[in-house]
Image 1 (cartoon, one colour):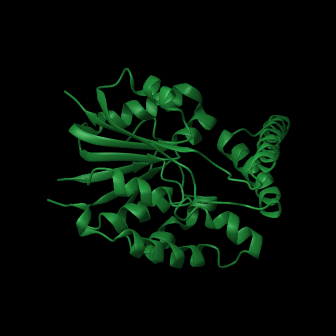
Image 2 (cartoon, one colour; image 1 turned 60 degrees about the horizontal axis):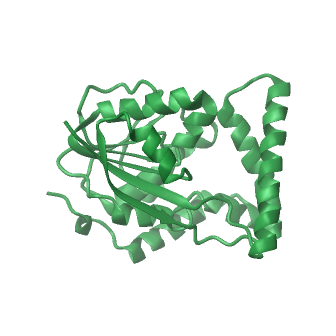
Image 3 (cartoon, one colour; image 1 turned 90 degrees about the horizontal axis):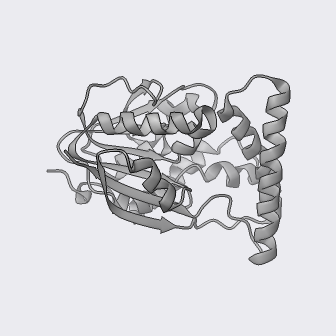
Length: 266
């Protein structure tokens, strides 16, 4: 039976993150290296999650809305004996280098291109499921209905007594609402801040990039709609940046991050 002891320790994982981060940001200028480098490890949060989540046992693990594949890399480092499946709606643009990223990480995973609202697998075929920061992307693109459909599908393909690990910026109350109608029992909750402290130069460079990313996730084509979304999110992020510099003297771009682990019942 696989266990966490099969994989790397936190210190070894930190070394692997550093090497992967250097590769991932190899073409970036110094400020962009800081911004893009956050995707590898997510300020220590990904390490924290894999250390606390139950070891996937006796079958395959599905990571849906896997994006760049950085959480797949962390899963592979922590649980190297578990067959990993990554599912994402596209592998284009920034997501196009996921195969190369996993190769650089030394992690094997089967990649499936599919909409998380209709997961192309039979009922109960996965022993465990995860989603790291993907629910909010689904909601941006497809609204609350899309978010609920994705969780329903993820529950459907999870075997009885299998575990689902969800991580996002959502409140625990919101997680409860999302999971309330599903045959899942929450077994653990956790919250962690990113170990990230950005100065104003980095923060001011990051905010337009994140606002552009929000527009891309919204999947709209009308130029006026795209500008409206960009302006709204840019203003929101600027306000939050100003609040953080006023209160603490540095900027943390995301968080606090909250993790919910649930087990399928019935």
